[in-house]
Length: 147
Length: 155
Image 1 (cartoon, chains in turn yellow, orange):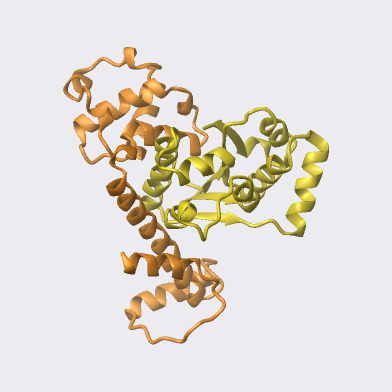
Image 2 (cartoon, rainbow over the protein chains, first blue to last red):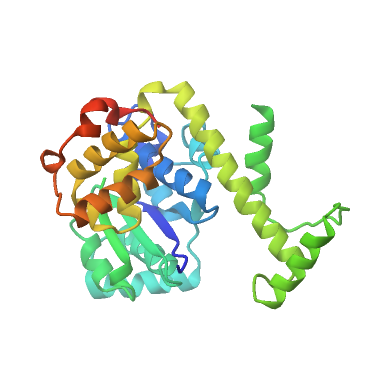
């Protein structure tokens, strides 16, 4: 059987919900983390949970602050924005509209799905993300899920 | 917890510096790694070993962090059905559109195997779905009756 990796990409509210134990969606986010951890127990490294750095800015999540430190402990890793990624996100946004952060989120999902993996974006905003994902290079491997 | 913080901080540190260490390895494992490198496992035995250790440590740290989080916030611990729902979503499985079936499968699986994980539940639900069950009301309960209420078992 071919090994297929999976990645959960967190949008603004998903990242906030994970960082804040009092958030009403916190248990839902922990279920996603637990699913990743359970699968990684069977096949280490098969599921990752990531947050684009632009999302952390929007969500006001400073990894150096106590509120966001749990993201690091739970092994939620950053997807940094470099020149190439910014260019790609700009092209996606030109083609499909949406906010700057939405375009960066879909670019991250597109990149992570490029090697045959499956990307699931968790967001509270389903207005623009599906349109951006449809314009990505891997629309069949990117799903947008309501948080 | 100091050791755990050390673990997390070390994993997060950029892998710029490296140290030559002496590791006692079984000879057979060393030969297996050499053969695996020839087969494309990694660029070198050293790379493959480091990568394998890293993913294992990442998985270990994630489990420890979740356990610590549940200890600090017991109400945040999700049930097995909720974790199975998330796993189906991450797999892009059509079962993600059948949360009732996943709940029923979690209940049934726990009646048979109390230490089941989300993969067990998704597999069981896939079988139920293949045989025409699409909701919890379709699932006749010999096991579900025994496991009634247990689908919310904490993971």
